[in-house]
Each structure stands twice: as structure tokens, then as C-alpha cells.
Image (cartoon, rainbow, N blue to C red; front, side, top):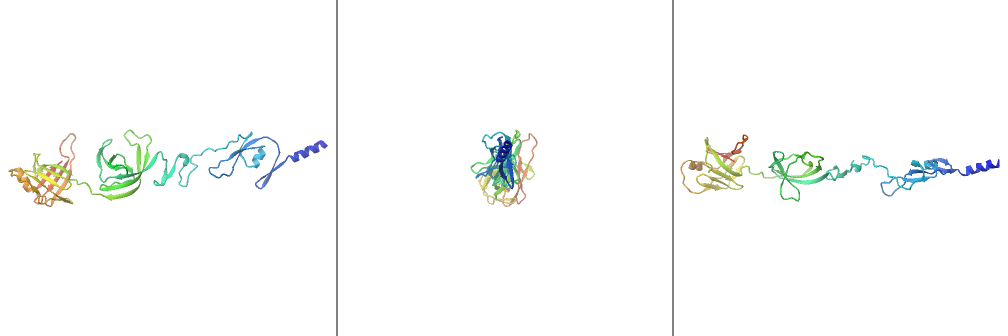
Length: 312
């Protein structure tokens, strides 16, 4: 009887009380070590739970441990696996997938795939050859002095000839681009500036007279050279002077001239070539494959209805 009484006292003395929230859980002093994860308070983030050894599973449960395993802990800190798409910032950018917020582009980007650029666009395109003959935007970065052909397109950008632009664009790397395609794509973020620029004078160049009124001209010696601020015409004599353009009229009154005397066609052409409010028009020609000849006609009609047709 004394033995049983002593045993009962020992068991009762070995009971430990552990408070858990509002309930008290009674656990024995049995030593059967287990390892569990316990959340701790941290000064900096991220704050991961730590592994702690408990004398038995009852003590671990009373301490609200999770991921309980048999045996003592090795003292390591448990780093839970990163859940992709589960770590969005305030902009919705997924850091685990490599995205961060770009305040210029106002969107989430991967820095190694995309970057913001400032492009200056010239007011006129230039002929270029990519996969086929085409017209290219003339573009340069802020550090470049020479215009470069831009063979790509800028998504969202509506180009108008005669205007220079400064654009904020997003340049993005293209994975596995086609052999004849660009390795980058471009999309417009916003137009920083748009300025009207004087368009290039379409009449500039050296023209050869190919017709007078309804008569074809076979001589190649009759020319009209138009520069930015002056022109010169060659018939019998050389005629030269300044000129102005207004709408579809060209005026160059009082052209200076050399004083040689000629007879025949050249003198008739020269005497009737009066550019005082003459009307001009440009006509683009489409040639057959393999054909040679002028691709553009400049037609000048004087006030006396003399018609000069030049080709280039």
C-alpha cells in the first residue's frame, strides 16, 4: 500500500502546467524530444520561424509549434520556400519573378530585359533597305550626333512628317527573334516634345528639261538646278538668281544672265522662261521593271502658259 501511495505522489509531482492562450494544458515530464517551428518577433523583415527542441510533443503543441518532427532539432533556422507570385509589392510587381517598379515607364519590368530610353526623331524619313527597300525614321540617342536608320516600329507612336520628336520609350529584349527581325521591341511611354520643323524643299536638285509645251526635248544640255536659296537655268545662256516658293508657285523675277547670242530652239526656251508667279507641280513616275529614265517630273507653267517639263 505504501508503494502505491509513493508512486501516486511521484506522478502528481511530475505534472507540469503550461498555459496556452486561455486554456491550460497539462503535460507529463516524459522526455521524448521533438522539434517544432516557432514564430518569433524580429527587428527586420523577412521574419522566419525558428526550430526549437521540446521535451515531448505535448510541450510542443502547448507552445503552438508547427511542423513537429521526432527527435531534437539541429539548431538551424527554417526558411520556407519562396512562393512565386506570392510577394507582390504595392504596384503589383512580383519580386520573386524578377519584376520591379519603374517610375518612368510606370509599369513592372525586369531590368535585364527592359530599359527606358529617350529617342530624338528627325522631321523627315530617309530611304533605307531592310528586308526590302523602305523608309526609315531617323533616330539618335541623347549622346549621338549622327542620325541612325531606325528599322523598327514604335508601338503607340503616330509619326507625322515635318515634326521633330523627343520620345520616352520602353526598349524590351525579344526572345528568339526571327532571322530578319529586330532583337528588341519598342513601345511609347509618352511624347516629351513635338515641334514643327521646316520641311525639306522637294524641288532641290538638278533637273533636265525633257519637254516644252507639247514638244519632247532630246537635248540634255538644258538644265535647271535648284538649291536652298538660289537657282540656275541653262539654255543658250546661264540664268541665275534667288527665288521664293509660296504654295504651288515659284517666283524668281529678274534672273541675271550671261549675254551670248544663240539662234533656234535654245533662244526660244530662254526667252519664254519667266519665273514670276509661275505654277509648279511634282509628279512621281512608276517605271516598269528594268526601265531607265527619270522617276520624278517637275512641271513649271509660266503666266503666259509656256509649259516646261523637267525630269530627275
